[in-house]
Every structure is written in structure tokens, then in C-alpha cells.
Image 1 (cartoon, rainbow over the protein chains, first blue to last red):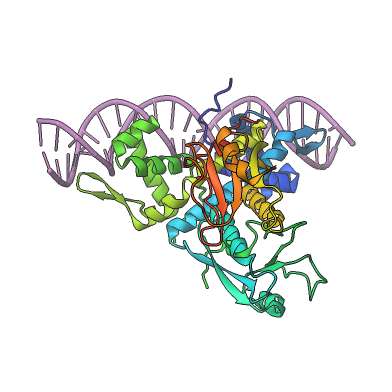
Image 2 (cartoon, each protein chain N blue to C red):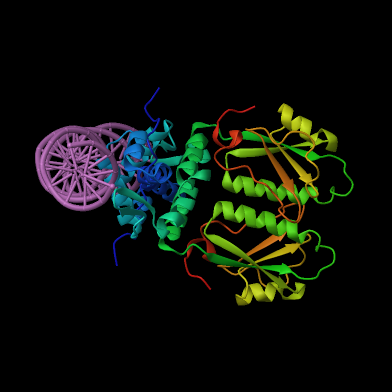
Length: 202
Length: 202
DNA sequence: TATAATTACGTAAGGCGTAAGAATC
DNA sequence: GATTCTTACGCCTTACGTAATTATA
């Protein structure tokens, strides 16, 4: 048995691994991290030693993809720097970034569903991002998309299968949350949304 | 402006701070961590320097409670070692701990709500604990509680306001998830539930 | 004086960069 | 021979423990 019992994960190494998995190239990843290739190699080796399993496949000619363990790990790994950022923001005092959530107001069919949906969504969000508060903004159905695009709300919650896209697809830094039974929620990509990573309050 | 820009948080220091906040005493916390008081002092100082704010109040006679920033930070901080453990387990291959979720089967009123509720619940769970899969187990309503207590399911999802407690309150290591509009879900305490922290699969 | 935390200081470990090495095309 | 990653080596940073120091009761 190796001694990776209490060996705490090194956030720098984890972050480096995430970047490497995105760049798929030691040289580019190292450049992006601002270190030499040698340092990146050793960071990955340290991480692999700490975890007790190889993460990266080295085939002929360099980087050769992730191992099975690497693929599993990369699913969870980005959560660590993200959580660290949340913790930093909490200490800094920016503990309450409010996410304005546009919800359809006064629509007969979905009205009974809304309270539970809101509560569950807020629960999920609070667990993933404790520093973010949800402020439901009742919005007439036809105004959901315009208000989202204009920035009056950050996210909208709609019900029903996706209909014809009303206008343009979601703008770059805004996300659409929709609920249906088939594919219920297109969750905003964590860590990329404005409200998830920036401390600015509005 | 200090240089805590990209200074990655040290998980060891974070963990030490969590223990200190629990023990409320440098000596006991250091002993629990297996280090000297001197080392713990420096870990806390390092953490405070990285965050740019003091976390611990030092009043006459030693530890004097947490500062405001410390209280905010301690709310989020335990999530970091917890997430690290999840990541370790994912790499180790224990990626699929299945959570057997008893859902009421064939109940007319709640039937239309179930798909969305399940999907949203699974979404929340996947985001918080990527290594956990949900296996819905349709269960006749009267059997929900017995099956939970007997261990045939790990969690049950019920609808409607809380009625009279059918039998004993939830056992120590089992949790009841209930949904209603008022207080929709009593979420199992993260990190303490069996299925959230142990790699054993069933 | 006893207790509690911080500071001083020496040592050991670890991370990074430069440069050399191995492998592939 | 060029590219890509790894290994060897030296330097420097830093984290720890021991022990002295300050402060309080």
C-alpha cells in the first residue's frame, strides 16, 4: 500500500492537470500555466503519485490522452479550484452574490410546479456555490427572453419542451435554464458564468 | 494590493483552520492534527496571508473566536477537503456509488411531478457529488418508510406536507428527503451521510 | 508560576529552471 | 534532425520542530 493516505491534494497540481486535459499538450499547457514543461511534468507525476493511479497516457510523440482514472478524475477535479475561489470570496466578504432568476409569472399550468422547482434549484445552487443567493424575479412569459438578453435577469427558468428558439441563441455570458421531463435543465456551465466566478454584486 | 492573486489555497492549512474552529484551542487542534502548536500557528498565519484577512481573533489568554471573515470562511471551508476526497475517490475508481432512491410508485397526484423532481434531484446531486449515481426504486407509498428503515433504499422522496410520523424518526445513518412547498427537501447533511463519503458500492 | 500563543532559528524536504537524455516521427 | 516528454542537477523557497519570548491569570 502506498502512502497516499493523508497526502493532501495540491490544488496547483490539480489545476495544472485540468489545463493539461484541456490543452492536450504539455508544452501548451505549461505555457498557459506560466511554468516550464519540466515543472508541469513533475506536477502531473506528483498528482499521480498522490492519487496512486496514472492519469495521463504517454504514447509515442507525447501526450496520449487520459487514462480511465484520468477521465473520472477530470470530471470532479475542476470543482476544487472552483470551491477554493468560492471560499476566497467568502472570506473577502463577497458572500452574497445574488443571481436574479426570471420565473414565469402567473402561468396557470406551471404555477403549482414553481415553488418546488425554485426550492430545489436554490438548494442545488446553495450546495454548489454557497456564496450565491437566488432572487426570483416573476416575469411575464413573453418577457423572459428579452429580459435575459437585456441583462435584467441572469438566468431564466422555463417549463415545457423547447419550442422554437424565440430569438437568438443564448448570448455568450448568459445561460438559459429550461425544465422539461426529457432533458430537464441545461445547467449553466459552472465556472464560466458571470455570477459564478465574479464577486461583483448588483 | 497584496499578492494573493493566484496564491492557491493550501488544503492542509484550510483543514487545520477547520479543526481549530472546532476545537477553539490551538493546543488541542494541533494535537488533533499531529503537529506542534508552532506549526499550527504558522499554518493559520499563512492562510490569513493568502486570504488577505485575519480569520482568528487572539484575545487575552489565547484563542478568542473567529473574526467576521473567519465565520464566513468556515461556512465554506469544509467543502474543500470534502471535494478533494470526492476527487480522490473518483480517481481511485469508486466513481459509481449508487444511491437507491425510493419514489412513490403509481400515485396519481404526484405522478406528473415525479420525472421533473427526479431529474432535478439527480442534477443537484451530480453537481454536488459527481461520484454518486441515483437509482430510482419505485415503491408503493406505504412501503416507503419500512423500506427506508430496512435498508432496501437509502433515501426516499415523498410528496405532500409532513404528516404524522409513521414510525420512528429517521435512523442515525439514514435520511429522509421530503418535498413540499414550504420546506421542500431535507437534504442529507453533506459529508456525513454514508453514501456521500464511503466508497463502498452495493 | 503556569498556561497559551508567537517568534527565532536550524534543518530537512520540495519545487522550479536549466540542461542533458530518451523516444518517436 | 526536429519535436515531445522525462530525468539529472543545483538553487532557492518554505514548512516543520525545538526552544526562547511575550502576555495573561
